[in-house]
Length: 198
Image 1: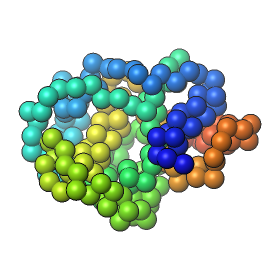
Image 2: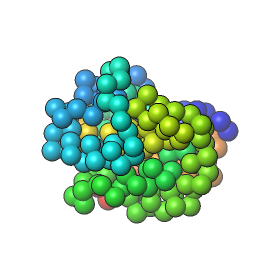
Image 3: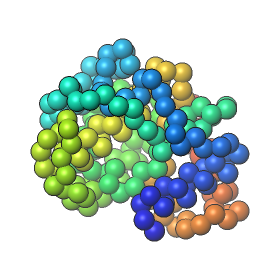
Image 4: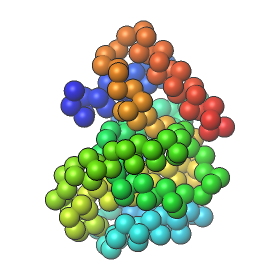
């Protein structure tokens, strides 16, 4: 199944598991492609150090809104991200070195690190020659992906959102369609993640 098709499938599964509609076009004034101090507040030094460590060099790119895979409102009030293999790169593994220990997350950093270690070779090769506006070098798009994943982890705490819910494709790779069993599996998975973040 294609990457985008998997993302759509699990967005719908999460929606059914939570009994909450997925907003796939949600925009937030602070969720943009630049790390600004007014948005990151106390975490500005963290995102700046991550940007530098990934060899980012151009913060003068055109400002645009970022999108999450979905936003779930109501009592959940969190962004949702479905992480396929390309998110588990060397660059992403390196970002975790900068995370504060007290940061609340709806996923396990130790588990995400394990996925990175296991899959970084494939992730690093994915679109290897693709550059990005702020990472103008071979592999730059991979670094940009890791950098922007950090936005989704750090920003919610400063803007009245609950921690971003992340589901890795590797956690649910046996699921290929929507059934009562797959909805229950996703519901149990989400409940476990939320409990761990509290």
